[in-house]
Length: 78
Image (cartoon, rainbow, N blue to C red; front, side, top):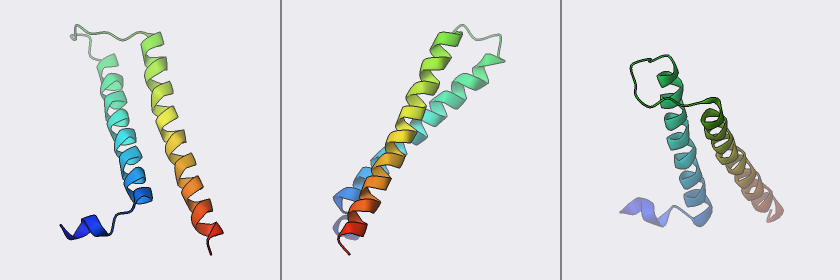
C-alpha cells in the first residue's frame, strides 16, 4: 500500500498511543454507563473505577509527553 512509505516511526508511535487511549476511553465509558444499570451482574466498586481512571489518565499523559518529545526533536533539527 502507498501509505506504508509515508508513515515514519514517530507517526506510527502516535497512532499506536492514540489507539490505546481510544480503547481505554471506550472501556472506561462502558464501565461508567454500567454504574446506573442495576441489572448487571458485574458491579465495579470505587477502587476498580479509580484504577480504570488512573490507567486511562496514564495513557493520556504518556501520549501527550510523547507528542511533546517528538515536537521538540523535530524543532531541534531546524
